[in-house]
Image (cartoon, rainbow, N blue to C red):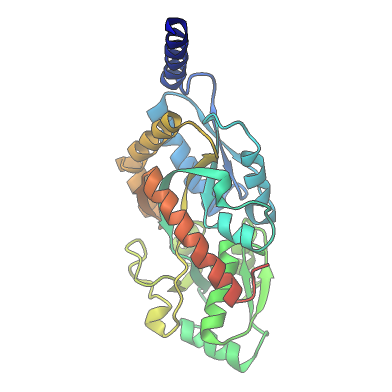
Length: 314
């Protein structure tokens, strides 16, 4: 019996030693589901920089884009659950699954922390004849499928957001699915008439006077975009706020998740991160692992229903 108790104590000691040593064995890697230069990439690199300082260990960003996020999710889900492989997840874990592009859902991962939220917006070139969302919708109804509207790809959050808006408005447009990195240049270059995108990808063109935002597709005005009216203010009942956070393969030890959660909180609450977020038009919105996990589960149900309603669920 004494030998058995000693053995258990030895196991506990080694487990504790592993927890204390994390993350000392090498750099951490955050998989970003979209290309360099996109909203997802820019914000992930902001986070990685702060986490590197907080953890005393390098946190690298690797872009694994494709299939609306499915390629990146598949990669991270297949890695060891040891806290060294992270995914910059978002609502896309649900949209990708429910659109049929991913064979597993959000339960393949353990939530670590929500980092920020973004408001999908509908934008046009600054010289567009449409001054309001209503202007665009009225013309879309008068000329079904003649107006071209770009988004970041089939099954992406911007695709779901556009579909939800069109459903609420009873309008039809010619949807053009670009890769996330191409959709904004396509608007500026005149290849599409409008687009639905996240604000961080549009901050430069907006500041340079190339693009005008017609509406935010959320219930209430975004403090980061105080001058942009919501779709609801203009008569269209649309609410498709996007969130981003960190998740790890399911089964990652709780002490490891706690270390990551603390580093993320420190980063998000820092003055540097707050200022950079303001400049990009995104809102820092930290949530700890438990609350974030509950949010993901709740939103998965809501997105499943929305995608069924608008004909995008498989």
